[in-house]
Structures are given as C-alpha cells and as structure tokens.
Amino acid sequence: MTRRIFLAVLALCTVVTAGVEAQSLDPIRYTLRFPAPHTHYVEIEAAIPTGGRPQVEVYMATWTPGSYLIREYERHVEAVTANAAGRSLSVAKSTKNRWRITTGGAATVTLRYKVYGREMTVRNNWVESAFAMLNGAPTFITLVERAARPHEVRVELPAAWRSVQTALTPVAGSANTFRAEDFDALVDSPIIIGNPITREFIVDGKKHVVLFEGDTALIDADRAVADVQKIVQAGRSVMGSLPYPHYYFMTMVTEASGALEHKNSYLGMTGRFATRTRGAYMGWLGTLAHEYFHAWNVKRLRPVELGPFDYENENYVKTLWVAEGFTDYYADILPRRGGVSTRDEFLNGLSGHIEQVQTTPGRLTTPVDMASFDTWIKQYRPYENTANTSINYYPKGAVIAFLLDAKIRKATNGARTLDTGMQWAMQRYSGDKGYTPAQFYAVMSEAAGVDLKDWFARTAESTEELDYDEALDYYGLRFRSVDPTTAPAYWGGATRNDNGRLIVSSVRRGTPALDAGLNVDDEILAIDDVRVRAEGLATRLAQYRPGDKVSLLVARRDRLMTLNVTLGADPGRPWRLEPAPNATDEQKARFETLMSGR
Ligand SMILES: [Zn+2]
Image 1 (spheres, rainbow, N blue to C red):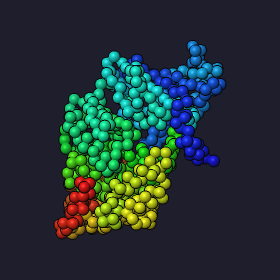
Image 2: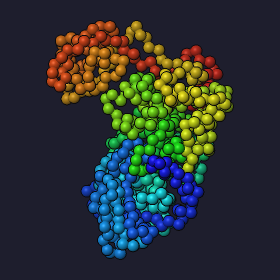
Image 3: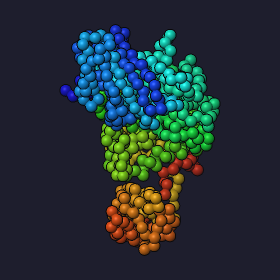
Image 4: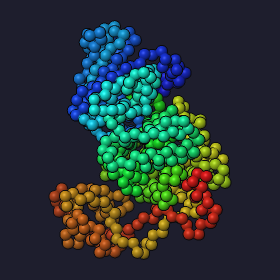
C-alpha cells in the first residue's frame, strides 16, 4: 500500500468524524514574534498538545498547494528547541523535515524555532523592517498526524506595524489572534503584517478586503477596488453564489511577480506602477480574476487527487488543465462580463492562449493531461528544450474551455453553457469529494446533452491538433489571414543579448535553425561573413528572402565554425482572432452573449 492510498483511505474516515475530532482535539497554539525584523527572521513558539505520548513527531511541509514543486522549506528553519514546564527536552531530527520530541510525559510541549524569510515569492516568506509576508507551509511546524486538529496563531506586533491581515478566522476577544479549523486551512491562509492600504466592499453580505502592502505610494486603490467588485459580481453570476465566508485580495507591491490562490484569499505580487498604465493594470486585474476564480475551481471544485494533501511528497494529478486552464479562460471572461475589459482585450487574451498552444512544438509530443501529471518535473522546471517536449496546461486548458463552451452552447441551442457545466460540477464534486477525469467528462457531457468522452480523449489525452472550426463558426470569428507570398525570411531560433554578444537561447523543432545544426549557447558572430551585433539580427535577416541560403559564423565553446542555413518563410502570427466580416447577426449575437453572460 502506497502512502497516498493509505492517506486516501484514512481520509474517508476523517470525513465522517471530522466535526467530532475538530472539537475534541486541543489546538496547537503558535505565537509569532519579530524582535529584529530587519534581520529577516520570524521567531515562532508552538504549544503542542502531546496527548500524553512519550514522544511526538513534528514536521514542516516541503511544498505548498498550487505551486507544484518540492521546495524544501525546512532549509530556512533554525534553532529548534523544545521544553516543558521549564525543563528542556530532547529534539532529534528524524528526516530532512521532521523532528522527534521526547516529551517526558508532559501534556503540552513548547517548540521554539526561527524561520528566515527573504524570498519574495507567493510560496515563501519575506520579513523586513517595514512588513512581513508569511505563508503557512514554510512557517508552521505541525504534528505528524491525520486528524483535523485546530491551529491558532497569535501575532505580537512590532511597535511600527499596525495590523495583521489574513483570511483566517479572528478569535473573539483576543487581539491579533486567529484560528484555523485544521492544518489545511492554516497552510491555505497567507498572513500580511505591517501597514497595508485596505479597502472593503460587501457582496451577498460577505466582506471582501482589497489590500496592498509594500511600495504603495503610486497605487490607485480606489480605482482598483471598484473594478475588483465588478469582477466579484461577474464571478458570482458565472457560478451562482459566493462559496466563501469572506475573501481577501492581497497584493504585495514589491516589483516581484506571481500569484497564488487560496480558499478565502489570494496572494499576488506586482510593481509600483501596476495601476498607472492600461496594460499593467489589466495584467494585474487578469491575474486577480484568475486567482479569484480558483475560489471555486481547484480550491473547492477540485481534482480528486488534490486532497487530502500529502505535504511531504508529490501529489500527482492529470487535470490541472481544468484547474488552471479553465481558470485562465474565466480570467478573460470575468473582467469582460464585469465591463472592466474591452471586446478587443478579450479577443486578444483568447488569441494569446491559442497562439501559445499552436506555436509550441511540444503539443505534438505530450498530451495535456500528461503535462499536468509531470508538472513536478516539467512545468515548474522549464529549460531550453521544454517547448519542444511539453505543452503548458494553462493555455491549452483555456483553449479547451473555449472550444467546450462553444460545443455546449451549440448542442443546446444556447440553453446551457460552460457556466452550467461548472455549476453542476461544483454541486457534485466540491469539498471532500473531488472529481476524476471520467466524472468531469460526464458532467460536461450532461450539460451538452451529448457524450463528449471521445472529444475529451482527443483534446486532453492525445496530441491530436485541436479543431477550431466549430467554435469559430458558432461565434462568427476567424483567424486573421497572413499572406504567405509577402512573408519575410525566417530562421526560427531565439536569441538573447549577453552584454552585446548574440547568444542562441532556444532552438525549436521544425525550424531552419534546428535543421542547420544551431545549438543553444552558440554565439552568432557573422552572417555571410559580415559581422552581426546583438541588436542587429532582425535588420540583417530582413535583407534576405525565404529560400535564401546564408552562412552563419558561430563560436561554440569558443571554437569557430560555419553553419549553412536555408531560410524559411516567417509564419507570422496566424493565430489572432477577429470577427469574420461576413458573420451573420445570429453569430454576432452569440459572441455578444458569451462576452456579456446574458
Ligand atoms: Zn492558477
């Protein structure tokens, strides 16, 4: 029996008894202190009930849900000690991320440790003089056990910091103290401590908090909160109701990037100019809409494999193209339906997904469900050959969602949509259940009124090319035409400017560059015996026509060599959507319905 099956069997028992256990188990109580935040440390004291056992084992998670890579958080932990009633206890490390505490029979032991936080990513911690950003997985050491034990967190605020912001439940009567019903909820609730800008609004009687921490001087929070509210209302219309008790939109203005979904909040990062230009602002809002839609899709409606989490090992799942890709599709839909983005911005987002899929050679090598399964070794570990061998499940999943939505609408004459399928899936499989691929295919088939099992097998489980005709015809769209007779010359390699040196950074399959034997890290020195500078490649290529043969002088590990390239025709950008000029009123109306949700 593998560890995962073992956990899954026990989880069934937990479902039945969780309510009782949560009440009967004493909480672990953490106190967080920041005696010298400028040194990037948080000091943690954890009062851990032992149940009277002579030894207890505790651990720190090695990864955080939503970011599928083993991160080895324990490497930032130090000074681990334990005591009970003033006596120090033996703490012995048992694995890279576990410790065994000899309790001496004490009912509660106090574990103390320090965590270094100086990684500005949404999956780790940052502590500095101005603020602290803490995530659950890299912060809280907990008991090795399967029971749903409550965890409480009390924060001792440094004098210069005003507030603690988190989606955890406040404990009434105790300042800066919060409660999680179990370890999952603790891991799933980032904590921002400092002096953030906050704005609030209410939808369906539920509090929504929009906050910015970091360099917030140039952030237009009032404009942002008005648009976030429209996105919330659009999300509510798509899914029928709001599934959370309250929701925190948390943005760190730290010149970093990335965002991560949680059940009742999201944590993201952006730059100080995020609300200053249309492009940056829509980028921030699009990411926010993506993470927000995860409150339904993946945090509640989830693949069966994503719960209960094994926080110490990889959790393999084949449907991240639903969890991430369908969420990306709705990340374009929600701002449009909320009136925040324009039709062209919506079409541009959709075109971007299609273009990314159709220009990635790896789509012909790896089915998207296997790209999901291998995310632990591929999606989160990209290198120069990734595009040739794998497909990103975000855009491919988004494109499948677009095609599926059209399919359901067409098959039901507009009576049902992908929204219907997502609502039904949410009703059936959210919470403790989770869905298998077959169950997801079945509920979508039901929404469409036709069996889509074979269609899913082709789109998600094979490397067959996607068929766009049905969706484009349904909405009266077309791909922008590219005239092949006027295409410029093309070699197909990608380069980077390394201090003025022109270095090959990737060579994709099916390109003249690969056929000619160009390697990643080759330095291109000359084309047809004339020197080419890093910034001059495009200008030089423009001197040639498709079919021309050119010689490239390259340095490979400093050895000079000549490679002969037969230039091809630039494929251009044939995957950009536009309204078909001959679209009927009916087709146009269908596209308007998709964009408005009405
Ligand atoms: Zn996501």
